[in-house]
Image 1 (tube, rainbow, N blue to C red):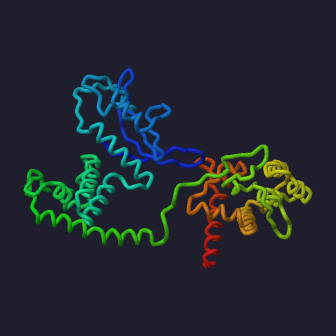
Image 2 (spheres, one colour; image 1 turned 120 degrees about the vertical axis):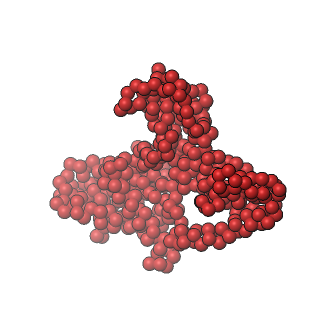
Image 3 (tube, one colour; image 1 turned 135 degrees about the vertical axis):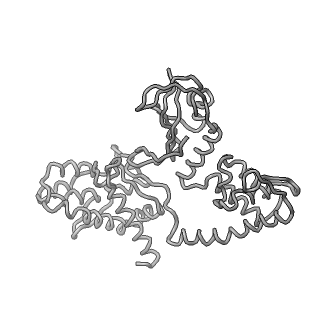
Length: 375
């Protein structure tokens, strides 16, 4: 069975990344299809709604899915049509597949996979040898899918021999690196294996320092604009205060507006009378509706991004509590969902450019830098 390949699906205007690999699904015959699994834990095949890891295990156990169809079973391969399997033959096992998928979901979420967890466990054991740390390392090693264990150190000169030495008793014969050869575990070889891991830690520390020299990794995305309040804004709308139509006065060229949305739409029209009616609208969505019927400035498309940036900066510099909410989002990517019903300003699936979210991230950085005295 080939290695997995990338895939994705759209959820609430953002992309959820995943991987996919071939699998056989049983119906009236066996059909070759794609098994897809995503960072959020959803697993799908065919045209169903999907399941989770436990559901996948069940489907493999009851025969709904198969790594290889039984000998003599009719099989349909898209693009080739019907074929008949003459013999069932695969080295792949259900546990190997499940282990691989679990590791790939970890990697999709930027989490250490089983090999990395085992590697760290042996580093910890080498730093503080003892029965407790050794048993933790042993369990972590056995949690690595068996076919992946020789790669867990990322060192093909050693494979996993240092690990197997540390897990064996003195005097035991264990497989060596070369196929068909063995070695006898001695006190000296155990000391050498410990030194191997002790020598890895300084290099890993240097690599980690270089990797994070410019700041932390990006955290999970934050979506705003999912909630609307037809009966009025609640006392504490949380992060939804980041929406452009949240009622927070902004000032542009000496004139006050009820919200960023009011100002943006009022400034978009070339008709002074329409400008004033838009600015006086009760709510942001009403301002947008009035602006839709008003003539647009000829230069609006070229300048609207700068105008929005100026309005958002004024909002957060004028309202410290709102600035604190923005700063509290940390380094999360901000996704504006459905902002102004515009693919330009919001995520809107694959086609949205999310400019409101991107501007908020820039302004958040400016606020943080200003607070730290960097600006």
